[in-house]
Length: 219
Ligand code: SAM
Image 1 (cartoon, rainbow, N blue to C red):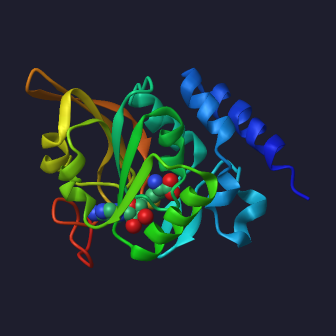
Image 2: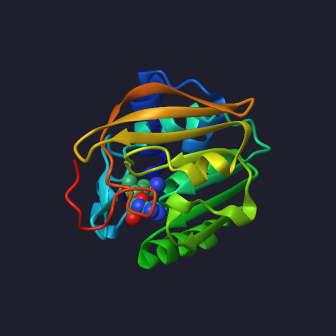
């Protein structure tokens, strides 16, 4: 039998704390969310490994450290409404749901969205709502958001996401080409938008009206 609890604790210590993740709310969320419930059965023995894993449809569940870095950059305190673009396995949304008040997540693949919804139900994450659609257009109905996390690589920060962000809100988004991007923090303050580089990263492409076009060769 795999000791997931121990693997989870080791992930927090060896992959997150040792690399500088300090936010107690983030570390505590990673200690609670059972990552093995979000990965396909064939990868159960490496669910807590220091790498992304395939989840079907050519998509991935991100490396734990990357999920932690993106979550920490949002500086959540507990009362927030957060939007995630790219539900994928649902793992990042579950981490956000442990910290924030409400999480809204958009996924373009129906099969991934319905799988993630099932896991949220089984684990009791009632503060996460998922919809199938083009996340580059955001989810206007529940806006404005305190934070937005985009878990796919974009050519630029989609305008609808900036528009749907609260004053003082933060967007964490990988921006760049198809082979690598810069994880970028976008802050909206007094009507102005500024951005800061966090680190280099590699994500699957954000496909949509305000992202990359499907089937078009990427940069
Ligand atoms: N957050 C996910 C997790 O925790 O497993 C990882 C997501 S994976 C790296 C990126 C996801 O973004 C994929 O599931 C992909 O289908 C999705 N995606 C790409 N473009 C999208 C779009 N325009 N709207 C919504 N989802 C999109």
